[in-house]
Amino acid sequence: MRRICQLGFLLLCFLEGGVWSLRNLSITAPRAVLSGEGQSALLRCSYDLEGAALYSIRWYRDEYEFYRYVPRELPPTMVFPLPGATVDLTRSDDQQVFIVNLNRRLSGVYLCEVSADAPLFHTDIRSAPLTVVDMPFHAPRLTISRGIYERNDVLHANCSVDEAYPAPNITWVLDNQKIAEMVSKQTLDLDFKERAAFSQLEINIREINSYNTEAIFGNGYHESAYTSQPDHYQIGDMSYVERLRYSMFPPQSGQFTINCIASIYDVYERTSELRYIKEDNPRPASVTGKHSSGVTTVCNLFFICICVCTSILGRML
Ligand SMILES: *[C@@H]1O[C@H](CO)[C@@H](O)[C@H](O)[C@H]1NC(C)=O
Ligand SMILES: *[C@@H]1O[C@H](CO)[C@@H](O)[C@H](O)[C@H]1NC(C)=O
Ligand SMILES: *[C@@H]1O[C@H](CO)[C@@H](O)[C@H](O)[C@H]1NC(C)=O
Image (cartoon, rainbow, N blue to C red; front, side):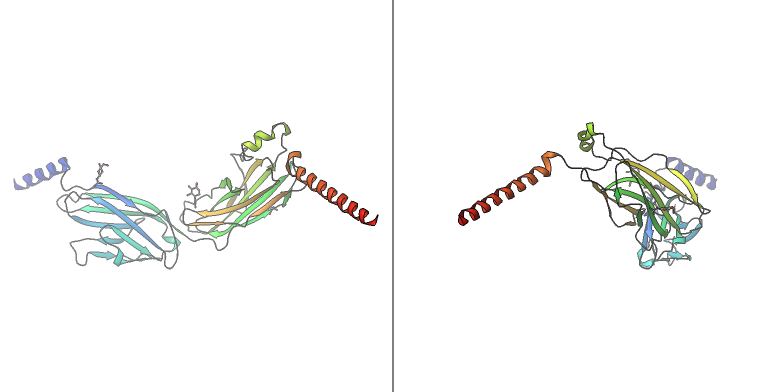
């Protein structure tokens, strides 16, 4: 009889849901952190026990538990080895866990599981992906087929990045404007292999429609975008390469800059050297521009000459 009463009481509590329950469990973790000595990741789980006591909080990487906090036990903290990193106990508690000196093999899904105390032991779990990044050693390398162009030329540019984990994305930048991005495929199998990244860009320099230059320059010459479906071709066994295409009108100055950026989430970004591409035979600028000042200089020189000549002639006579 007493047992039935107890059960009934528990059921009541459970149905009411307002007592001894666990609410608003959420996990906060960086999407990516750098690997190596001195690097760290702070993972945090916040929850609302609505007045109940905490029974335990457990942290897992994939299915392996690496940290447990049970307030009733002494000491409350238990740490299980996490190969390739260390849990800093001085900065870990009933809400957060602080992991230091991570290695890229610790990339994966991190979970926190919170249990409220008796009688219901209401338990909930949340997860977040975390990638431990090994950055490339060098800045991305940019090579260009030619540093000069003529109208209707096609220029080829390559951008390559050293091996890294995960493979970086490559962004192409023309005159400080991002024009295209090569998104590296993320391998799902957790082999933690470092991969290089490579992207090719084909720039078509178009002939200006001379009847419509105002409109083109007015709207910026980056109007025509790269092809939305880049070519894919295979190099070696595994890696696919994208060739991006971009067509543009030559800028009014006859010169533009190009560079590429390698990035990994928000923890790594490095740019290649900046290269200048110039027009081979710049066409004369409009008559109202530099030429008028040239003409006045010539006139002035001519005038000075006449003055000097007349004064010399005057003295001679
Ligand atoms: C918990 O979540 C509910 C619903 O999303 C919200 O109204 C409430 O303010 C949250 N409580 C806390 C303590 O964050
Ligand atoms: C770009 O890379 C491809 C493939 O390796 C190569 O054939 C081509 O010559 C390179 N072009 C430039 C401009 O470096
Ligand atoms: C690459 O870019 C895509 C799309 O912007 C983004 O979702 C992905 O996280 C990026 N990958 C890396 C490694 O930064």
